[in-house]
Image (cartoon, rainbow, N blue to C red; front, side, top):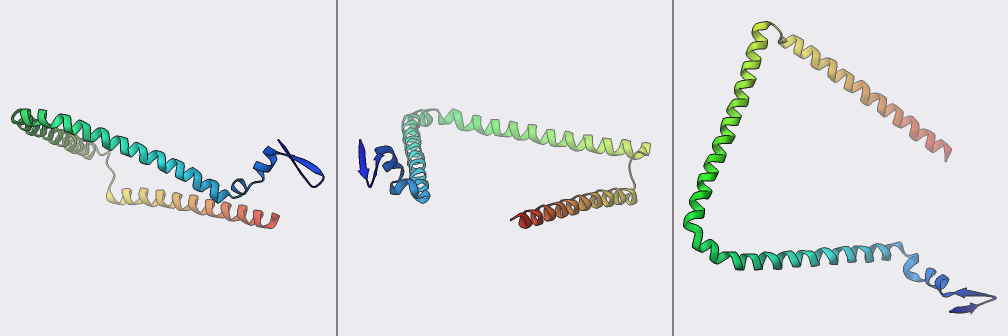
Length: 147
């Protein structure tokens, strides 16, 4: 379909392109946000419905098997806690043995040497940050001068 306005005919696609909605990016953003929000709200509703159905079906089974499930969960929790505790003790033991080995072989650093290493690392980081700030400042000043 072609609409004649003035001297030149305009195709319908041109008229739609010039319409109010396409020329307002806020309206387009709102429509996209509304679509995404509506989709997520629908998914949330489906998830809630599925959860309620699963709970409705599982409740009688949980009530029947609770004398078995509750003690097994407690036992499983205790076993898991024991394994986690033993793993933590193992890690602490390995750290203590490693420190002792380094201490007696003389490979550990004294406090003064550790502080010196830390001072060197912090100084290097400070120089890096200073260089970055100077570089960014010069780049921004060049951009301002170009405009």
